[in-house]
Image (cartoon, rainbow, N blue to C red; front, top):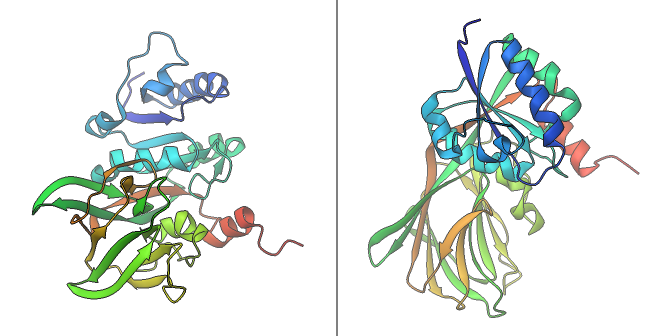
Length: 288
């Protein structure tokens, strides 16, 4: 048997059910002539298996990536492979699962569909973000969900100016400011009162977190805009946070510059399921 394709597996840490799932998954991949590239969390459930770090998996050019976990695991995987345009099959082992919509019971029928090229794809926009301090870029990130400038545990509000395409849009005195993609509109932005954006709409949403002024409402803008958040004053514990997972402390005078990324995430999707099916299932729309 000659292996002609590679598949990367990225797993959520601390999920005991992976000990049962992963050996069967590797048996399926071998039977279909795939070589498995496993991350450290996946390898913890195998013996004598070589680890391929998540950040290195794209260099090995897998045909697609299998994510076993929740939406957080998918967000981390997306940032690791989006630049290489590698499709992701996301299997939900978490609680909500807006993005990881494939249930565990659907794993193998979905894999068969992917193997036989019967599975659809969906492209999701990303944000590119730079933190500029004293006119130097000190950090650079990509985000699938959102970029958040916000305070930590200190009660005092932060003070931000928002510019769109160089034009002052608003001054916010708030706990934070969320810049979300359509994908991220169902995450922190939604919890803070923002609207739900359909994934293929060409827009981003700006949502203030607990603003001092009740007239500061979420704002939807075209995704061609360049966003600049200028940090005027900030509590001692304030952070720039990307997808709720990575980030860096903020200082007064910092500028956070964001625009639509040249990269996008490719999700493998069942063709008979749409975004509103997911909303009805996850948000219990229509139930009494």
